[in-house]
Image (cartoon, rainbow over all chains, first blue to last red; front, side):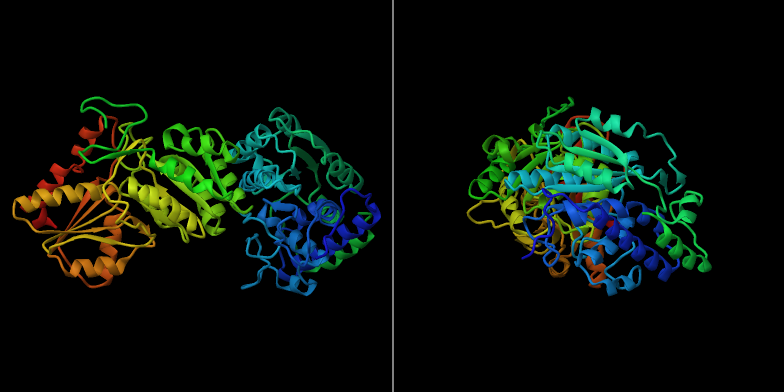
Length: 280
Length: 330
């Protein structure tokens, strides 16, 4: 068995940025094949996924069910496009399989199912991730394992009552083996965030969490925040990621913010060029 | 059980008759089961006291988690523990589990095949606390969820045995909980509760009573009274609502002349509906009367009064069996 990553060591930020760029290339190619998709979300979360899967998370790509693994729980099931791209980079699946994304009978679904190797929960019904992550963190603590639980959820999910129930319990149970990555990309199904959820960081602090708020597309900031989140201080950790939808493709960064972005067929070549020229 | 005429707020017992009672059979059985193994955890949502899980909490405090009044989180946290290798027994009232946390039971538990074992208190008319607390349609809601086992135990023996049975089952389960003083109807030395099994308790042809949950105790008592009046009856006890043994229903129905279904639940969507589906698909047609809660919310009141009003007492069951007009309509 080969465990990937040793979080105690210093990462190469340049290498992590290269991984993030590779994930973004996959995301563009996968969207292009089906002519649509959650492309702007995938581009925005690529940096965090690269830092998690290529530095912070201890797991075995050849055995995703390894009992002592750290867990990464993706609550926003529609971010699957970026998760599959990351899995291909990490060697959990073959890159060739990405061509099946969103097709009938593919296990690389538009929204995650936990029957696909490496997926911890079914993530499409928003508001489900954090509660299950709290349960997993309690479980690892009971097992006296030092495995940690990382959970991604979005700003939109902060409108679900269940997310606050789970935040309350994470703080109350003092789960310092739990790290929440809150992707604040400012959009939801109906467009820009439709009802006030700010100040996210202060609210999480008030619920008993250790909170950092960072540029979610800065690899240096993500790596530093993940390092700080290793503290064993009796508190769960939250990293508020301020991300830019479409990050790395300037045309998409500037496009009207929408949950499901329409792309014309003749735009994909340009997007590819923009990504290669971008400094992400 | 509450005195007729007076509503009890909390903590009502199910026991009514002369049978011996067992106190908190669920919590005691769970505590005992967990004694020899460390993969059992318990959870509740600020109803530990009223769902009889305190014996488990007291015996295994490190493995008990109270998430407060947060039923969606109760189910979510339970699913997370299940996905970490534990069998997560969680309790709340049936109304809150099924109505408030339905999506979490469907997706985080059933769709994921997570080892979450829900025990849901106050099924049907076991509280006089009104529509907010009476889980009158929980069986209908739960039985439509794929891969979920649904159980409505009759008595203390089946409660005790269902704890071990759901622990042995690999996957999510929803069991109705009878709390407080619970009558012992079945002899634990002779009765063996198994998920999916139907039990023929009486086979004399005549009126075939198909019952589930606490209504089976009443069917047994009604059958005795009917026998004294010269009416022959048969009884099929069906504590498992899902997977439902439709073949057992069809086989039973062939040996009787008419059918009465009895459930502590609204008469649509639960046992009565399942029996109708089973018989229709088997091309067996019998006059049928469904005993249970009518299609309406029930008010606050004392249990003897409310159960009588809904036709669920032994006396009302006997009267229904003898009510020629009702059977002519059937």
